[in-house]
Length: 232
Image (cartoon, rainbow, N blue to C red; front, side):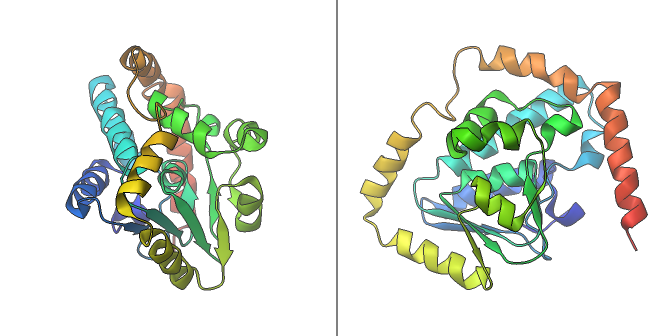
């Protein structure tokens, strides 16, 4: 991933990821971010521009991207270099194995702190990828964890001084498994997790207004203001 806002998940990045997964044609995927950052989450500047209809469309495409990555039939490994926050953390959780390159990056799901709710399929995926004993700490606590704590709660699987080499090695090992058996086993493990269910659209429609509320917009402006203050 290489894009504005240190690989923020805007409309263009979401479509890029969907397209790249299509181009992978069922082959193994290593997902990482350029410039020393995995992804800080959604492009908040773009989110501020959305009205209700645009936000509904955006969250629907985000759900599609999450489902495509989570259900990719071949092995997927996330190489987390730097921050993986909110939607960026969700991307990492979509992958079969997660390696963090040792550094100062923070990892976590801070949606509750922002005041927004997860799209339904994304929440099911999060629930399936985080152990029950840590789920409330991560999702309701909405904390951004330092790497060692992210390893403790299971947001990452491995922390390595040379994360780049380790991630590639893990992907190569997974890719040695017979492809059809790997894909079938993955489908069985993911059964009903990210797939659409009756009522999902109604739930998404109920969630969307929170994303466009003035309360959330004010919190986003505050976050963007802090980021601008920290910039050189």
